[in-house]
Length: 282
Image 1: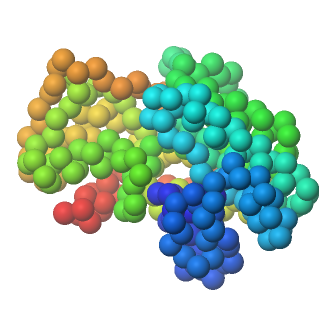
Image 2: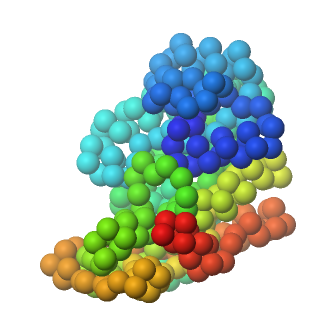
């Protein structure tokens, strides 16, 4: 679900490249013949497709963005809640499919301890998006035990962005305006993950037991540090807009549970993949 989105589209491409049968769902016009166009709030459509296809895995990536939750909490929550209700009700009838749900690092908003955030800590998210994601995590865990929940950090890489992150925004500005502007001093720290690393880990779900996993790389750079890398690559200058307020810094997430569970590290060197991505943009 969400096969036309940024991660969903890349996941679909890899499934096709590896000759793995799948059915895609998206509320926008489908790109492939084996994808259906409908909204997950449509009870009849989601019931028909789950019961007729009887899937082994159901990947749920079709949710509203952090920005949507910031701008209109009630509308975003209502639609996402209706969608996940319809999915759970029908998956419970199959008693077979493993549900893979994409949560977010925003569940850790408000966690101010110096220790890295792991999957065991108690959470009281301040951000609307984090609050909603944590609610859905708890709902899934309680109602459907055959699940894997990924708490995803900021994703970058080639593909069709619906909501570009800071790396893409700064890169586009460097290319078009020959400069990069930072809000405030650029002290906000962010944790990134390369799109190919996301897909590698997601396609390893067959080796994971049910539970919650942080899906993130080990980098943790300030926006200013990231801007310096991009500015150096494109040979442009950085300007600080001191009057602008920076975004929230989320805590550093620990990915040890995922790497130990897979007995393998599916994470690339961040600087190498970032430069690879910038080269493709250039």
